[in-house]
Amino acid sequence: MIHKIYEYLLLKNLTTAPSEICFMLTIDDLISAPERIYDIVSWSLEVTGIRMVTFHIDTEDPTSCEPFIEEIRKISQIAHLHLHQDEEYVEAGKGLCVMVVIGKSGRWEVTESIRRIAEEGVDPCDVTEEMIEEHLTFRCAPDLIIKTGGSHLTDFLIWQSVYSELFFLDMNWKFFRKTDFLRALRDYQSRTRRFGA
Image (cartoon, rainbow, N blue to C red; front, side, top):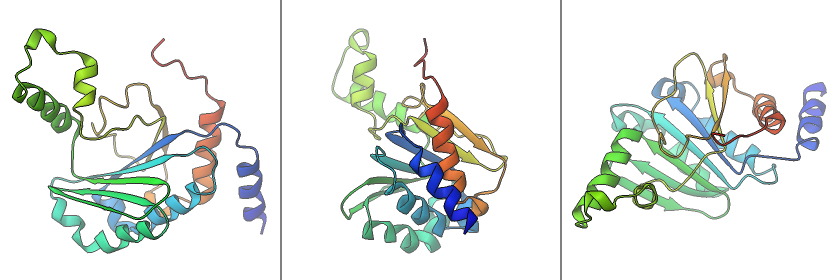
């Protein structure tokens, strides 16, 4: 009961939520608690201001996530799911935009962007930052990146996350609770974003 009251107070005092949030997970995180992704999406629906939630699952073998795909697809019951798994893309549901990306790296994405520009016959001297951004696979710019456990961040969204706020938790993914989620949002609210200035 006390825990619920604390969650209520945290949520009530949130006035500035991040528009876009990204969670960076390992394959071990997914294996330990695949249902947590759905939980976080449902918690996000309660927060005014959140427009997009992204989950990146770091793995060199996208097929390792196969046993958990049905659990991930349940998200489409409450939100608009965009699922990227290897070369497969699935879109389903309505509402809050939720992107789940399995195995793609930031270096791969930037390389693909440059390759597409080259295929269009653009002179290298005419390539701009804006042009690279327009050719990126993932059109998002997370305000907040959340990482649980002791592992390091991946290079996912390396271009888009240059001004993102980072929030690290020592606890493992399977122990991540709604309270921890709301604390991360509260921490974000207390920061002064400088956007590289």
